[in-house]
Length: 556
Image (cartoon, rainbow, N blue to C red; front, side):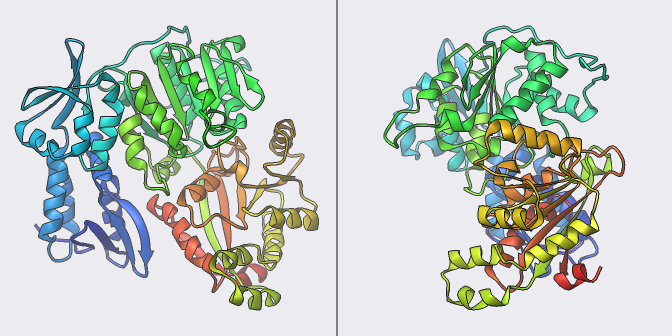
């Protein structure tokens, strides 16, 4: 087999991809399903294979033989023996452990070899009731989630065949026409995602990954309609909860009085209830109980939907471990978690069932074509000495709020005059100064919910052609006509945040289906390090950042 010599596989299963190679783009596409992009170093992109990335690929139907073939096809030299052994170990473990209920008992099954390996895991002792044989153990019924979670952490995947209870029945049908008279139907990829949720005929649990603007909410509603069950939806904000409620009323036959909102000042529980992560994890003191967690047992839910599942806080992970009998659906545009807890998402919510890449969605015009540009801005003269003398964290803030960025913002607004534009930032003082200097309305965490909705509505109508928003607009804000975003500051290189902010632009446009995302970075400062990390997500999705200097902008 002739190697195309594009990647170097290292003993720890990290992969260096040479971007100068003739086969670089092809290799990127081939390794993407079973790797994660970690960083960029000069001419090399650095990926890694983990147990989670590998199991996700196998869950989606990729064969072990295909993964090995791809690595051998593109490798320079040889794959280290230790890397081959680790890869083979993880692939060999896939599908060999199963959870089932037999005669009302929770049974962990596996072949003799793998069950002998589990004997070495001391924490398993707490969950074992009895050993029926060297291939079948009876576990405590309440251990279903915790066992899957802990085994995933030490490199074992468990196939959960226990099944789910149906929960309370709810009559909910998809409409063919919305109340406003618009024709409505599911897109082909949404139907495929819904079918993937039901692929094991149990309609069980898992994560669906769709780019911002492609209709994750509609896909979730399609699964609700297919199950006809009482549903608890947990989402990121009251704004997002209201958007779910609006979509449900427009796209289904459900009546408004059968949808409850549990967040902000509302505490309504109904057949369909939409809650926020904030309210569920609220408590007065760190020693108090999470009183609102009772919502998970308030009704006999047949389905729990975790919107923006990558944001799941630790207390909800713990609750999810105890409710494994309820069907669970995670929705997200990116499964990146900066805390490294992606394994908990898959072990407790379920495996990745469907994944649509952003570039593929763009090619089919489901989302706008985004032009990504990083603009390097010089540090203001009066900030150079304070920056030099500051501590690292303070240095980052000084670079982020660099006043020279204001000049670039003005030039970009002139360049895209007439296009709906968002100015996004991390630091309120910086946003307030831009708002004051340019007389542009600003929305932040202190803006009351009603006022937020009014400002979003004015932006959608065109009354506000430009809107300044803080990080509260990162998630689930429906501003479909926004086609320019200027990011003046971000938070510590978060790839998740970069994806969310670019996601504000991705909804397809009525006319020219294009959008522009600018990130302003102070050159020769710590901000460049974090900007590089944030940009990796888009590189992983098939996009390229154009990096230009402030002089190129000012000369236009």
